[in-house]
Each structure stands twice: as structure tokens, then as C-alpha cells.
Length: 281
Image (spheres, rainbow, N blue to C red):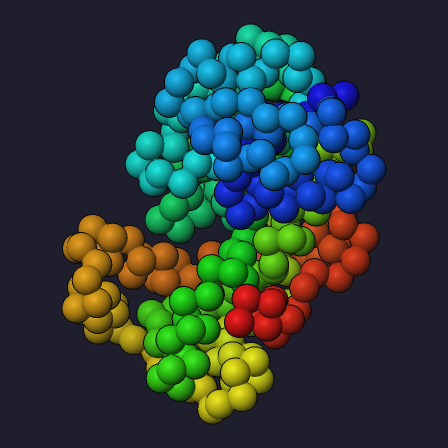
């Protein structure tokens, strides 16, 4: 079985390939799809040029491939057509397993980033691909900047109110992807993946305190306070508004669910918040 991993030079893609190899996959059975193939030269697997905006490169990368992991693109606002290009090429190539990294409860969530994932999931269904949907919750690594700021200021500031986040380390999510790519029995499943424990921002501040060795407190922000602060820090109005909307979604509970699905898939507990933060400190 030949597996194509798109976005292979990104943080998640690299970890997925490492997890596939750790689980015994033949390096020659893995194709690392990358826009810049030079950046994939250290992955230890076959490399193919793959640009989401270049359908011919996608078709070429899929030659002889049976399974695909489509790691969602990073260009917000452009992801649906980019993903559609991969879906169309995979359908034409007759792939037997199509795995996509989506967002929590993508088809029903009010989270600001959910619509592009919802549209992608719908496109996968419309293409009648044999698919597995991995709805990834937040990566603990998303809080690297909060960790760095809190180490300097002693404050975690957010508009997430008392919302909870079932985060896990990227390595956990990468292992889950490797499992479904290598194992049979997952076609047709939609997995809501998250950490075993959902935490709130007061607990995030306490975890950062433990990691940094200094007292850190959580300061809740109103939407207006957060927007003004982000713009003062140099973010444009659109980007600042997007961040504020993300935190509003967290406050409303969009990332709070944790049912142990990922730990069951990977065969171990997910990485605790403190350990995940310590790894990126």
C-alpha cells in the first residue's frame, strides 16, 4: 500500500511521516507531497512535488498511490478550492482510502474556521470517496506564543472566558492519522479527536506557571479589549477579528468535548497539557 501525505513539510505532516515509519511502514511506500521538495529531503521517504494550486502536480503525485492523507491547507479563505483539487485528483486516481484532517464538529460548529472544513467534508461525500474524517481539536503547540508571553509578563490574557479546550500534542494527532492510514476498518468513520482532559484558561495559566517556574495568572478579556490589544500589537483588523471570533467560539464550548477517542486509537493516554507545554518551552 502506497500512502501520500500532503503538506508533508509542515509541523503535522512531518510527525505523521515519523509515526508511519515508527509503526513499521516501508519508507518506499510513503510519498511526501511538498510544494518545496527540498524541504522534504530529510524525511527519509519518497518525495513528490505537490502544490494545492497546481492540479497537474497533484495528479502526478498520486501516481500509484492507494491512500491519501489530506492535511488541511493553511491559507484561510483559499482552502476549499485547494482541497477540492486534491479530492478531484484522488477520485480520478481511484484511491482506496482518503483521510482528511478537519475541525471539531465541523458540520455543526459555529467556530469561525469550521465552514471551510464543513465544505471540504461535503465535497468528500459528494465525490463518494472511501474516506476517514479526523476532526482535530486544538494542538497544545498553538499556545507557544501564550507560553512565551506569560514567561515574560506573568499573564495569560484571552477572550475565551471559562471555555474549555481538549487539546493534545501534535504528535498525538499524528499518531492517530498513522493508525487510520495503516489499519483496516476505519473507512466511513468520523473521529472527533482531542485530549483526554479538557482544561480552561485558569488551568492553562497554572500549567504555564509549573513549566516556567513563575506565577502566572489568567486575565479574561472582553471582545473589545481583545480586539484593541491585538490591533495595538500590529494585527490588521481582519486578522484581529478572526482571533477574537476564535476565542468567542472557545468561550461557547466549541473545543470542550473529550471522549477518549484519540487515546483509544493510539493505544495510550494523550499528552497532558503540562507535558505538551514543557516540550515547547
